Image (cartoon, rainbow, N blue to C red):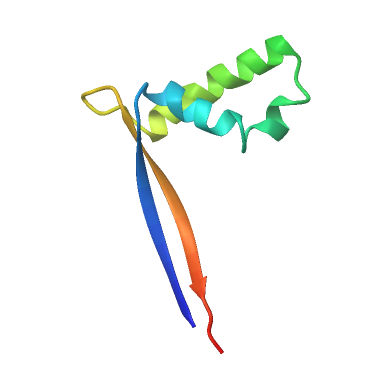
Length: 76
């Protein structure tokens, strides 16, 4: 059995807003769905502010988003 972790770093143009857009279609859906439009806007504004702290923009304005993947290969 082989197990390894690889972290891909996706460069996203657009800074922290691009990270928010990346997750709006997947991981953020359960959090955004029950909110009304004003609630969504407030949530996303706060989320983007926290993303900006966690993933600072590079000099060109892009952000490197770490994307970890766990691989498992088992043979008989």
